[in-house]
Image (tube, rainbow, N blue to C red):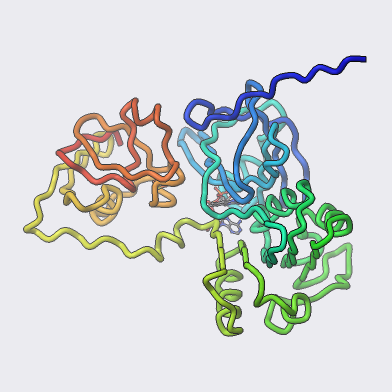
Length: 357
Ligand SMILES: Cc1cc2nc3c(=O)[nH]c(=O)nc-3n(C[C@H](O)[C@H](O)[C@H](O)COP(=O)(O)OP(=O)(O)OC[C@H]3O[C@@H](n4cnc5c(N)ncnc54)[C@H](O)[C@@H]3O)c2cc1C
Ligand code: FES
């Protein structure tokens, strides 16, 4: 028998490719599902474990954008997956859970993001996650496992109850077969079907020192809800941990942008440009050193935005006339720029502008 190797599929190109087709859905827990995607034409996805994609949906006639970390590993490049927790009244997570079935297409931008880690042999890591914040750490762990890496990873995941433990079986299986990987779950309470026999409560220094006595020697990667992240950060700081080795991802861009120093409003003596928002029928003055989105928000305008850092693509809009100085960070494709689109969160006017917004 002769085996012939077929040519590998071309790489997914975020500048040209944008449609993902759902090919499978997995139920992970009572409120978490994994959606597996392939491209419309054969494509391989190249990304770093921990990166995310921005998904665009039209719900109720409105275009909405949300970011989801790829829970899949780049070591299996033909497919990507996201793992989504359904948030009660959340429009996008609810829509995905109810409507995204095999065969359904969705538009996506990326992968992108600077929270990633390819575990290196001889290095020691502490992965900390809670709830759906497990996804980037899962991608890193899957990648580590697939590559047979000899890195030393202690993975400590917190959940409300055993019924909320995402990827429980797969993580335990990987820990059995990968030397160097240990997995510990901490639950706050029992679930209806299971009395939790493991560590109980919330993560604290006593628990961490018991599970991972050498945690101060490890590079920390953490993702989870804001209160969890804040509590763990305070705990690590108080423990004498070297915070230069602390890497975190928040799923809440609003919170991140709230931490950013907001640019000062321009003084009346500053030379401003007129920026007209056609659909909103508003014209505002924007100083040349000011981002358009920040200036519009200061004027009380409500415009779609999320990261405010040129990453997610939420604030994209058409520049009808004028010129800007734009510093995007992955949230817009070159061909969109060529078509006159801009991200107003990271664009400063260099002339009077008309925007189709
Ligand atoms: C970089 C990045 C990566 C992300 N990766 C994932 C992922 O892998 N899996 C995932 O499920 N979500 C992820 N998210 C969150 C996701 O983008 C959406 O915010 C989430 O699905 C809720 O969207 P929604 O439209 O249903 O509700 P929204 O209207 O966006 O949110 C409703 C409310 O729920 C809060 N909320 C949002 N996400 C969560 C959460 N995970 N847990 C508890 N409360 C929350 C919001 O702050 C808001 O108050 C990520 C976000 C970012 C910025
Ligand atoms: S708000 Fe995210 S790119 Fe502008």
